[in-house]
Image (cartoon, rainbow, N blue to C red; front, side):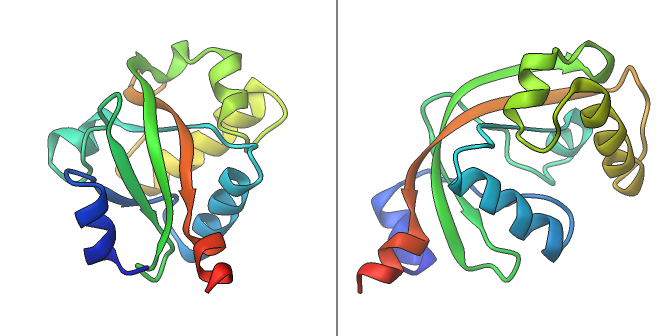
Length: 142
């Protein structure tokens, strides 16, 4: 299903990519598809510059594969802002990438250092979501 058609089905949907490279993006989408990843976060600074679209509770958004192909439609269930150092373990585990808070902190610090800088007191937009539609399954049905 192409992006234009999806935007007609889900008016107001924002598009985004997980991660900051093809390999990480593919890994994160696989975690979402497996039901392991039900949360994500980003630096507040990226939302303030318009680089990222602020998630909104109840809105359906379209996650893209790294090549721009629609992969998933997700619904935002919760949005909170908090400092990196205050992220609780339950949220870190809901991101599905690590087995504990310490691993989450290490990996996310490296991510933020690669993407604009890191500070343990930096503000994050923390989002919980659910999958509404897996577009890979739609392609298999055709």
